[in-house]
Image (cartoon, rainbow, N blue to C red; front, side):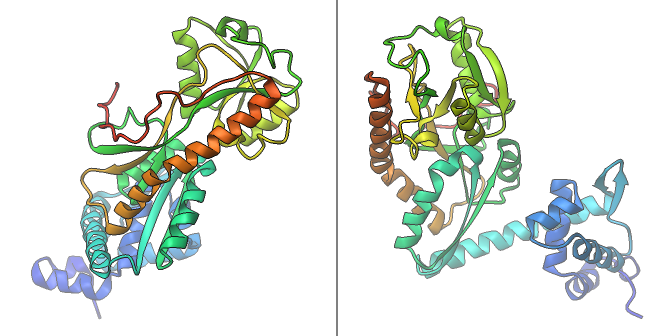
Length: 355
């Protein structure tokens, strides 16, 4: 009879028991369940079925000799024992991640792994940079996790990825470093036959008469646009709140309104003649994409190399955006510059919470 940890006691004998009867995969599962608050979400993140997750946690509980989770409504929470195991898990998994980083550095860039967390709107810029990076460094395995801002911040807090691509970063505190690597101007977009297309220097107050399409609450683009209107003393007439830039573009083409969008999001359609950029005072809103990482975790050689590669890609990204802006201006019949005096090459420090 093999017994349980509670029967074996602590000390070296207890540690030996855990080594023989608990697996790293079980500890990884427990860590994910506690962090995500759900067996289902843990299964999705680790590409497993929920029954497999439940079975492994049951085996871990049996080995330790006490329940590790209990249900609270529709969520699961760790028991006291579960919290102790979770704390140990974090130390073990972080130690393994650091070991992997050091081993990869010893191998150079011939082999390695890069985990990149990307906010949804950054899918218009990140994959192209990744593609060029992987062509140069063919031995690097890349894992791309695309999610909304709230879940991306959860992943940042748990240090699940090496680097994170996002726009807004001023609410992240001093624990992170944010390095700007590309311009991300927000331009006011309308259907090409909209009455305001071609009008010069449209005052922002005029937009209060137009139906404005916005992203959903919590979106960084939405926050930037509303702050911009508020600073001008203008209250926009919000007609719809939509969950993605793609949906907003379709709504614009459907004649439902106008919207401030990242120029990246309309770059591929800029030459089609369906969209036009409006010459609105105070636009474009000058923003930047940032690569964000935790100060408490040393970047691997692969992550540092990708960071430098992304920064070096800025001239190409800028040229692509200028080309898109030129095409949109041909439709509008106006001249705008999205990038005058817009320096993205200089890293900037993280800003304290609430700034």
